[in-house]
Amino acid sequence: MGLFSKLVLRWASSAAERDLDEAIARVRGLDAGEVAFLVVLATDFRNLAVPDLKLPLLDFHELTQPRHAATPLKLSMMAKHAQKAGNLPFAASIMVWIHTARAAQDQRLRYKAKLLWSELSRGFPYLRNAELEFLDMFGRSPSIFNAGRFPDGLDPTA
Image: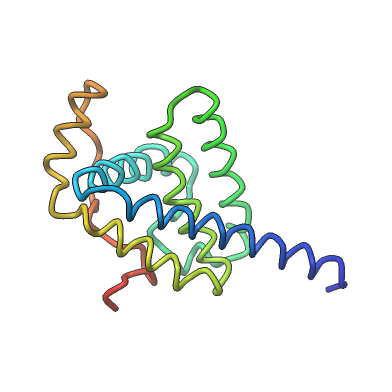
């Protein structure tokens, strides 16, 4: 790998780390009920949108495979479209998976991704309330199968 390639990779890794630090800080600023709502949104996205995209977001080890190298970019494009459409909750839910996928591909991000998931776990006891809030907001029940599950390799208690 040439010097230019190494510099670009180092820059991208640093930018991803800054984004992850900001995400952790934002989630820390939420109360547990708000965190639960974010978890429900992220889980609904994973369960409904991701099967069509064939992205193994809970299978951390599969995400490390070269065939999934573009996963963070695909998710980033989806988040940007959601932001442009004014769907900020949906964009925030995708960001959870962007950081998860980036951490699968860059070991330097894994510790901080565990911190993110530790913060998200504060909402796990309140998922039922968040599910009802989702129903009120969107007029349908969210798909919350495995909502309280950490992605493989990112369980902060392990």
